[in-house]
Every structure is written in C-alpha cells, then in structure tokens.
Image (cartoon, rainbow, N blue to C red; front, side):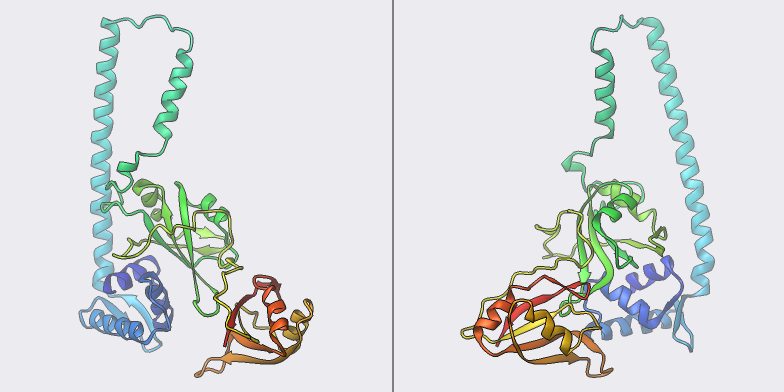
Length: 335
C-alpha cells in the first residue's frame, strides 16, 4: 500500500488524508469504508511519515518529503539524457540501413512495377499499424517494463461513458469496469480498464493528468491480483455510461414475498415520490423504510418497501432498472 500512496502523491501532490485514503483504497481494490483497509492505510501512512518520505500538515494535507522532491528533477534529467542517447543511436542505425539499401539498389536495379504492386505496398502499411500478436500482448516495452495491460483510472467525470473514454485514451480500450458502491450502486468516479497490449497501456499512462470533461485524470498501472477474474467476461466496451448497469438480475424470490429492497436512489427521493412511482404499475405501498449512515445520519440512497400483498410486490418488481429521478432504480426481493 506504501507504493500506491507514493504513486498517487507523485501524480497529484494536492491531497488531504481523507481524499488520499479513498483514492489509494480504491486503487488497491478495497472498500473505502472497510475498517481493516482503513487501518492498513493508516499504518502505511505512519510508516512513510516516520521514514521521512511524506509529510502531513496540521490541516491534514499530505505531501511528498522535500528530499524526494529534490531527487525527482535529477531522475528526470537522467531519463531525458538516456532517451536522447537512444534516439540518437536509433537515428544513426536508420541512416546506416538506408545507405545500405541505396547501395544495394545501385547494384540491383529494381524491376518494373507489376500490376497490383501499389496494393501490395498498402497492405504492408496496414500490417505495420495492426495490433501486435497475442503472444506479445504483455511484452515489456518502453514505459511499461512489466508488460501490464490493466490500468486504474481515477478522478473520472461522473457523466463519462465508454465511448468518451475510448476516444480520449490513446491506443485500443477493450474492457471497462466502473467502480461503484456495492450497496447503493453509486459511481465512485474511478474504473479499471484493459488495453489491447502493453504498448497501448504505456501510451494511456503517458497522458495521466490530461483533462477529460474538465477533470484531470489519474492513470496508473494496476496489474490484476492472483485469483482475480480479469478481464471481466461480460464487460467488453459497449458504450455504456459509468454506473449505468441499471437492470441487475434479481435474486430468487422468497415464498409469499411482500417486501423489496430498493437502491441507487436519488437523494431527492421521499415517501410521496416512491408511492407515486409504484402506483404506475398499480402496486400499492404499505410502508417505506429508508437507510441512513449511523455516524452522520446521511441518507444511504437505499431502503425497503413493503406492499399489502405478494401480487402488488410482483408488479413493483417489474420496475427494476427503470428511471426514477434521473437514476435507474435497483430492485431485489427481500424477506
């Protein structure tokens, strides 16, 4: 977790402890509300502060230690020199090859172009721009020495969709998994994505900090952990909006069920609004119970609805995924 904290601060030095915790825990695929995860984050922060790698102000602002910041320009300078050297060697090698080809042409004049030769040239250029073979998908490359193709994206606009993301990122995006609250279905503003190959992944990480719909993106390599099912089987890109998997499969209905769980609700919902919503299918509501956070008292965006009979409950269940105050409602059976 220490490395995730340092990477996040390198990308964006303007963090408070709270915002940094949420970003790091999400990138580590942990629930930001989980007590054990928070405890692990706190321990990592104390360790880094003790080692002098980070500083935490009295106002709760987190920053990299000055020593590390001073070292960064030196590293960048070394990297720039190395890249300049590689570029020069590559240029010399190319020039040498071109000279060799020219000498060969003088010795062996090219034959007249045969019909279809132009098409053959075009086919060659297409081949060069085509995706790398499957065997090279995770091949280490410049900017991606581990050949990672899975990325974490943070600080995403809440109205982002897959098509917008695909057009903004360089390379080919093949899968997107929006990160949402397990209970409410609300979008956290972050996602895991799969790129076609390691080169495309490196290109995408290279535009970290670029703005999308007015927000500076956080982009990091995020290799899947052992046991993770990745890429997701059913989440190849289809142009869907973040957090819009509106109609989820309902669980098995209990016998004589008269209660429903309702989630992904707008904060503007009230008793009158939910009564009218279910009246659209002639399902008369008997009672409503909203859930709130114990500490703050804030509405969680979920609740329970009871109906007078199982027939009304069945009718109400048909509204699963329908739009209510601008959000697709999530409905499931409950005892």
